[in-house]
Length: 211
Image (cartoon, rainbow, N blue to C red; front, side, top):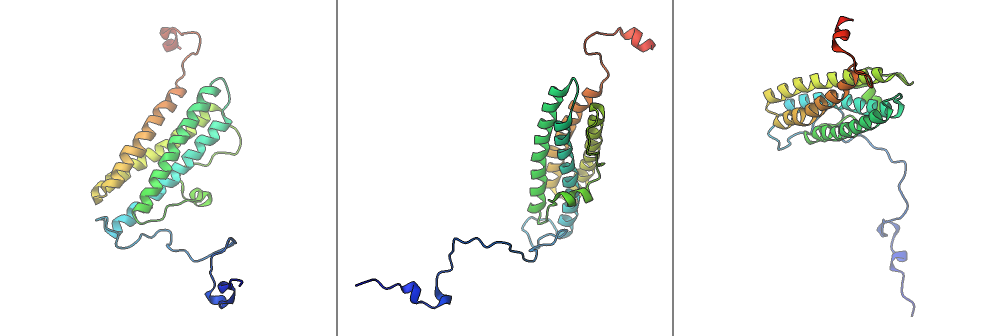
């Protein structure tokens, strides 16, 4: 006697809903608006504090994402006798900035906020000057990177001080231990490439000072 197909006899509404067919093109309302924070998180930080900190962290995030991409642009487009050294240095700094991007974004989410994410939104938010699409000389590339670092370093100091005032020790630690110290070190490495020193023939310092 053949077995009965119980599933086939069941009403359509009672049949199993599992299917291998992907449910494509889905859209729905946002579950949280940008610029807001979740309520009642057990972080011992009041909502106004978290609102202010996530706003400032998103500004820092936008600038850090822009600096990260500026490093990749410089990595690809660098030219000249220092190509090899700078090609590697720019990529190393790109990787370090990428880690900072993730750290800052997760801090925003941890505080109950929404981290900025898309390139168009970052471009609207960042305070770093937009470079041209074309290739630039090495001194200009490095100067652009240093200008971007200066914006971030200054903001880090302000953010760390404000976070300390508000009792947000986690954001204070992130601003100083992660973002500030990484950017300070990268500034040092970049700045030394703009020192006007001879590459092959040493110059008499007396003649240089006389000129």
